[in-house]
Length: 354
Image (cartoon, rainbow, N blue to C red; front, side, top):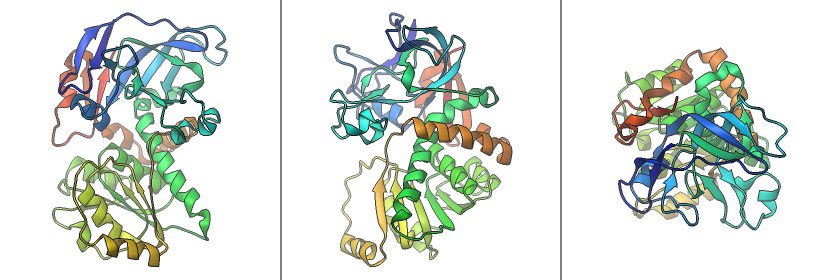
């Protein structure tokens, strides 16, 4: 069968190859992949700066954002049947089966020895067929259709927003305003989820005010900020929640100035720039004096995927085609190389396996 693989840490190693079709073991299902989304993590794996193949394999099958159909059910699988459309979660418990992993929240793994499909020591779903443990599958309602390929990145946002609200139970808190730094898939999805919660939402990026990203923000009732015209550091407004989704150190540091008293900021990026902050003492002082809080969020678990399904249906009802507009490129598997080339107006690229 055909599979899209990489050989980290080699650079530009993504290619299409023939590999053996897997067989489901006890508790597993065989999946026929329908589509996969390509994101920054996939591109970083291709750049050789991230990713790890499974033990004994020289390559890693990519694809952690996936939509699939159940093709075959292994022994002792009771909750799924052939033909079910599903989205597999990404992270699997550590081999030590730590407290958090064995209670269903491996996104908070205590050992760091977890496995991640298509990223870390576990093959992904960018192949014609793949296997997954049945316990980590999310059944998709028919009305979502192909849009469910967005469920994995949405689950990341669901966790970030849920944790923000959970953390703020440290006090009486009724947030009204949110600021999202970045208008890629995560930033735009965060804008939608925060709007569903009734917040006034600003979203900032470098594109012009008539760009697709700006239009999506406005169409869901948000306010778009072009940071080339209005740099974040020039803004005087303060916000209750700030979501940083660019992975850029400079943007993250500037966004700290947006935090109001008793506010919270969630970081979703991986920050690789080596840049010192000359006034970091001032940053820390402001955090202390304002009771402000910063935290990082990575991965997600089944509960966040389930939240995502409910919110996807509500986004469709309230904002019509907002989710459809996130998918800016639909490629066939044979054209996979195009997914690793950035285009100016690109938001989310999907590769179809049908």
